[in-house]
Length: 365
Image (cartoon, rainbow, N blue to C red; front, side, top):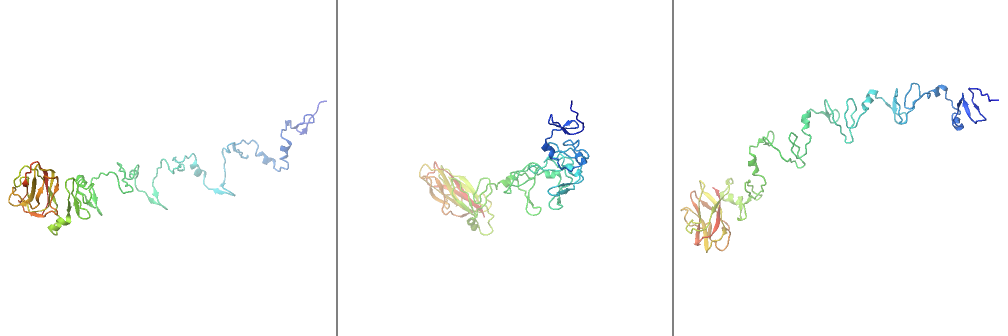
């Protein structure tokens, strides 16, 4: 006789060891079923799980997040974040939405500004800008005015850029239409670049070609070259002239003093070129090639003529035995009237073969 099994009843089948509810086999284990033992949830409470799809929010249903822990849409009356009861989020949805799709370092319309890892933003348009504490100070400079700082390197002048000096307060090159120095509006520098350049590379106390002359701390000027050996001492020179004469500038005349003519003034003759009297401070003979035979040379001042032998500047100097630079030591200081001469003459012997130059240092009186 066939088994007769009422429908809608749970029963155990002794033949097949199974349990069915309303014809549907129950596959849960006894342990799994025992977890609901003592459950007090009502049917309505359990029904909030009915029809739920993970990740999709449905009205009057439980919220079950998907595999990425997300739900598609959720309407919340109030939101609190943090430990315990949390802190209420009072920002509106519109206020929170400014964070949507924000990329750090990139400015987007109607979105929050988030700087990148270098604390930078790509582009930002500001109506006004204030810097500083509290309300700050308004930046009134325009964008073009601020842009003169772009690309500037301290110490390097950039076309259409601001000039920023380096740590030594220097800049490499600067072209100025006009230059003024001093307090207030300053005093205009009217000297040209070539005129100012005579100061370049000047060492105090040392004379240099095409450069300004600056006395050293001892008020001396070294004018030595490879052939001469002397210094101008401003104290000595101007002491001879007396107080109030320090504006007098020493001058040096260079004369060819080659041998060959053995009469008075035959080696060289020089007439005072100034309008008034001068003071001869030093005189020296630079012999670069000796006379062929025995020879002595004398140099001196004379008011008679340019062919008169004189010897008060150099007396009977041997120019045959050796080359060299020769002068009185200490040098004589002699007044030479306007129109008077300095002559170099053969004192003894013959000056043939001699190659030399005579230098006369003098100042106006």
